Image (tube, rainbow, N blue to C red; front, side, top):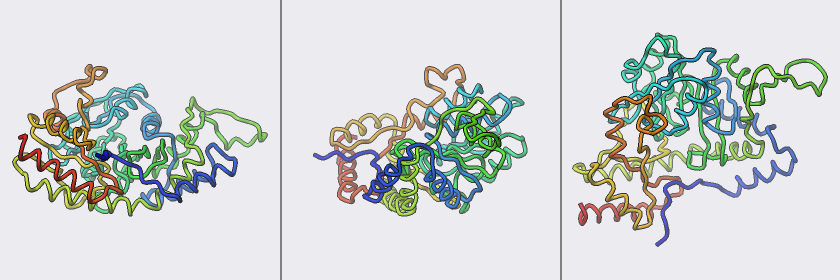
Length: 369
């Protein structure tokens, strides 16, 4: 029986041609396609500046390094390790916050409980394609004079009150193959702050200041930078993919509606993510809760039927070995980590494949509960 993948990138002949055309120019590093990709991305998100990078993790690190002091950074434990890694690798201390059990996102209330005199920033993570409820979060960060960073790796094309995720603070996006668009590896940082933009542009390119008016061969660094740049041909792929994002997300939302309708028939066993009416979801992942006593059974059953189901995230960050020094009890996060399952979703998921997933779960429900 053919495998149904958990995620699958949607690449077309136009995508391949965009890469090929870029390679034929002979310009293989950061170049003109990066500038166009960044401009297109600004227009889509509704921000003034965007910087293409090699990953969302690099964007998170830059967003933290631009803060001129070290301290505590509030993050949800319910996320991928790169969020915590960015905090630690910039010399800061992660402070783990719980999430709302229904939306599975961090809230202003969660953030308030973690703020101290040492807090310099909060990284909100928009889980699985659903943005956080941003109005009160923005107010809390402004009131307490702390930086707002959005880990929007999973949320390209989703909105809070019609405003794009990644436009409320410093936005950090991922174009990894599992995401809503892909450049294979890649990321983007968004901001409305010109000073941040200029400083981070230098930061990702070895700290070199290109504005120094000397001989054309002169390369002088203003700071200890990195090589976080995205190659020109991968930016070309990003340009091509971004044109299709709305189409991709529409397909994801239609699939999610079908999942929701299916799981609503089994309220005693499954719980779907609850969505505020002011939010739109981009469904980078589709996850559903199941009783912890049943999760292992259904995951193994789906795998036996060649359906790639998984879990995001178990263990949560505060339970991981290298982060336990920062640990505390987070009730909702720990519950989610024991109950969540992630099911296949991508724009090219066929109806017959979806029917097979539904049939497999329904048969399991009847026979093996």
